[in-house]
Image 1 (cartoon, rainbow, N blue to C red):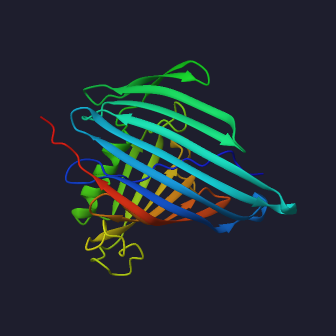
Image 2: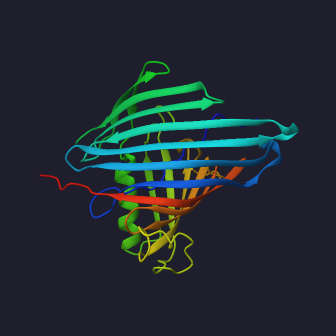
Length: 263
């Protein structure tokens, strides 16, 4: 059985001097377990990042895939989300919609806010069902987390562990464990380097594994994202692993946008 959608928190440009951008990826199937029932896949993924430190940051995400199944059948999965995070990363709004063969299957809307003393936070889900929830101490929102990873890479660090809340799993946060590889200089073993907006930039191989907090010690993560992370915040060569199948997005187009300085 094919899941109705796959949600990944992807590294994006977080703040100046990192670049607001629109990145387009063509997707193919890298591998699949027999239990998934998937024999092939093709699709496209688009990530758009915009905003500033005054009005906040917006990340729009869409991934549409056609999965080819046993018996010659196929299914089109379309995952769309929009996230807004305040400039000081203490507020978050998240909307997600999942379509299967053009029919809406799942919808989420929520908001969350962190306490100023880093003691946790609270939130409210309005769809699919109304729910008030709390967030634990030390939780971090996505843009703040991604900026943390870029800074860690630039500082030569190799590992980060963060309690992350991005809204994709309702009221539940995740433990994000990140491994950062050795910096690759511009053009060194990077298949995306021909694209003008990453040409001449160095990057790092990065792998982020996501675990449920109550399953922190399990060997296999809930899902895993691996990519080349460029110094301007663009994610290049990538692998998306949800356990049953692995998708292989290739960066085919990237356009940078200006971020106005916060006044």
